[in-house]
Length: 427
Image 1 (tube, rainbow, N blue to C red):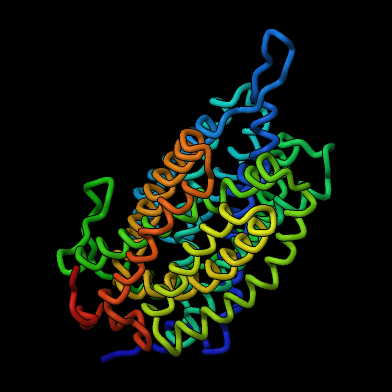
Image 2 (image 1 turned 45 degrees about the vertical axis):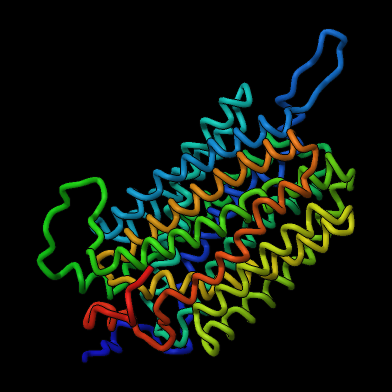
């Protein structure tokens, strides 16, 4: 079997210039995608209504939940976009999607009403989701198996840094920094992406695969070979289950903290600051467990941890908000290297971006269901705690299904192409 060592970076080069630029684009995507979450309380107030008595009312949890679900639902378009990267190339796709997504996010600052705001972000989100998915693919395709989880962790850390920056900016700006100005600041990462564009390179693994005679694309989506459909379906199910919890857990937490628990925005800003080193520790732990205990075990334990933390966040008062949020951030950081490496290692180069698109779409569907159900349950039951239990409890059990996937630790990406099976393909 040909290992193709020349196609990969040196083992110590997981922070090589070929990996860092995609991470920068993931940072930009994280900023643009999380800015709505960080400013959700301001959005609810800005687009609220004024009664005949002159009282100003915020948008309800149901309205916010449905609006956020529509935005997430737009990310389904990331599937054909990411799939296109298997034909048109990783570089062109990630640059176009990132730049357009950031530009639309900046335009959302001018939205005259809530549903205009939702519509603009629903157009931006699939572009940013596809860019982030392809960034993970690029980082995996230029690194060896013993460095891959580190490279995936770097992309995940960059995305988290971009997301956390929105919260810190909002806290530092105080009341003077409304959601419109915060959205307008998306032009800053847009300029950053344009300056780093020429440093984005096409992975040699992909260009070598493209040198083979590939049939021209006839459909919007590239087909998934039958041998890989079982594992793709299972990992999509697990990704959707994870998003069912992380969607409302990460999106509603700032609204819940400020509008329900009456915590000052500076408290959550400090929590975000604390989440930085904690998230870094989680990425290191996740990388170690993925490489030593295996991708499957690490993913399963981390997903269960995220679910437990989500329940704590909404069930334990003001202190529980902070503790649960930090616990969820740590568990999600552990989850990132293992699940990201597993998702890229299960599929060959010819369909890796297509698989990433399907996995992204499954996450979208899970998050949409989670956001809609969480908002409705919180309003009808009058309890955020019960909403979190109903959503996160079953996911703890579903996390055990990771053991049904083939273990890919120690496998090079080219081995997926050269000998098809990686253990039993089962559901």
